Length: 145
Image (cartoon, rainbow, N blue to C red; front, side, top):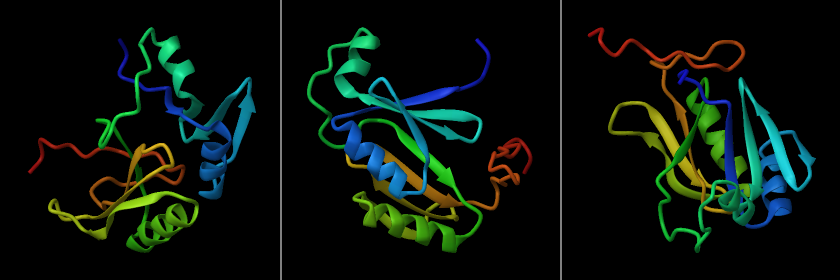
């Protein structure tokens, strides 16, 4: 298997609400057959009904998890000010701030919020993870000290 992710699909309980939330963050999506597609750099972020996504994966949907669902999406930015701005925008759009912006234990500036369905997002400014002009990230060589 090639080391690549092409789409991330979030199961949502209310497609219109979720679409409106991400659009309030400044994202532009296309709705096709009760599915919303956002171009996110070199991959796609997809919103789809939670029950439909579960069925498509051959999994019983069950109730949404209470608390942390085990996945966090990350959005790196170019400055600490951008962290603060994006966190405020997410909160104004209906997201829940779960971690106020601050320098974390690892030493970079970050925060976190959840979208209306509880999907966790980290917003971070980490100078050790440089962003290209197109927004792609280059991971550092962790073997170099």
